[in-house]
Length: 232
View 1 (cartoon, rainbow, N blue to C red):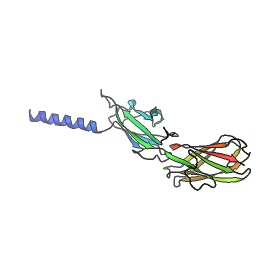
View 2 (spheres, helix red, strand yellow):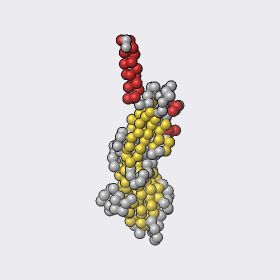
View 3 (cartoon, rainbow, N blue to C red):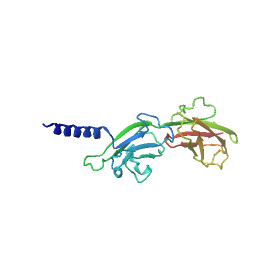
View 4 (cartoon, helix red, strand yellow):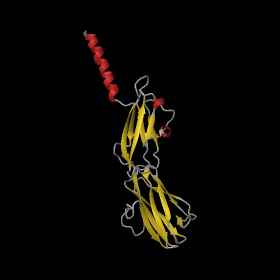
């Protein structure tokens, strides 16, 4: 084999290895086995050689490609998307995000990557409960409040969020008042980026003779949490 032929073969081999080692779609955030920091978004980088029109991103098997921006997708750009509320799968907080894209002009299949990550644990601390992890009666926090008495409840995160994180607190009926809003109305509580908790007020309006009022707490990138309120 001539010297020129050897050079051509080595060049071809180098290009092939480079293509095999690079990824047309790379997940920058979250990292593998990382706990998502609240509303910190998903970040995907498209290689400059990728066919942007073939990008496909799935979260736990659900297509979330359309959630990414800026659009239209372009090769060599970084795309972001806000995570949804992340519900446990088979009792686990572990989730899987997968991103792929074709190489421009390539006849081979798509390339990319997938990683496992964890949802941020979202908990509520009720009056009289020493532990904020709501494990007294999993998966619910239980609290008994007196009628027409104001109480403070604390929302706890397992870590400080990357950005200010809005948590929606929704009561199941009008037997409780949250932050002096009309009975039964939901409220939004913000956990600042430099803290891991926020407080809201609750007042029992009507005794729960039978059953309870359930508070549902939801936030982007978080596992929902629930608290059952008994008004006496």
